[in-house]
Image (cartoon, rainbow, N blue to C red; front, top):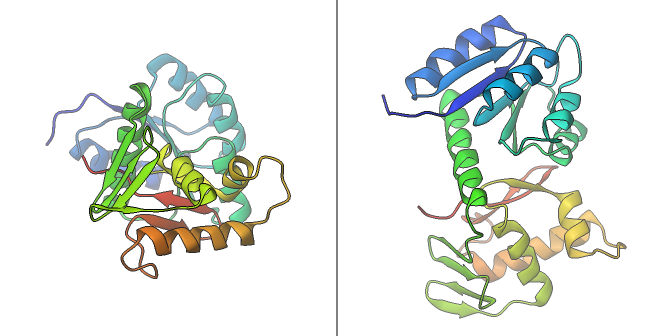
Length: 232
C-alpha cells in the first residue's frame, strides 16, 4: 500500500456505497471520512479540510449541488460528483457550480481512483505558479511563446483555435463545460455549442494524429471537453 496523507471525504447516505468505497480507498492509501448528510459533510469539510470530496447529489437533508455551492464559497479542494443522476442538466449544473469531475453510478473502482489522482495532480499544479509549458505525448504547447508543436513540428493555429487550447491547458485533466468555453472564447456572446463543436473539430485536425480517435482533446458527451493531463 502506498504512503499517503490525503484525506478523502465520501458524502453519500447509501451505506452500501460507503462499504464499497472505504476498503478500496484505504487500500490505495487514502484516509477516509464519511458523511451521510449535507450538514455533516460541510462540518467535516471545515474541520478536516479533505484533499478530495466525493459528493453524491441526492442527500436526505439538502441537494448535493447546494453542498457544492457552499463548499466553493471557501474551499478549492477537488470535488468529484459521484451520482446516479446522469442527466445532462445535472452534469452541467455540477460543473457550473465548481465540480472538478462527474462520475455516474455504477462505476469501477479503478476509474474512480484514476480520477482522484488526476484531480489531486491538478490541485497540486494549481497551488504552484502556473506552468507555462504543457506536454502530452507528441503535443507540446508553450503558453509563454504562444507556440504549439506536434511531433516536434510547429503547428499553425488560428487565434480562436489557440485560445481554445489555452482554456483547456489551464484546466488540463478536467472537463471544461461548454458554457464556460463559450463564455471564454466568445465573451461578447452570440455563439452556440455547434460553433464550439466545429472549432474543436478543426483544432483536432491540427493537433491529433487521428482526429476521429483523439488522444489529447477528448469529448465529455453532452457536457464539455477535456485536454488530457500533461505527462508527469
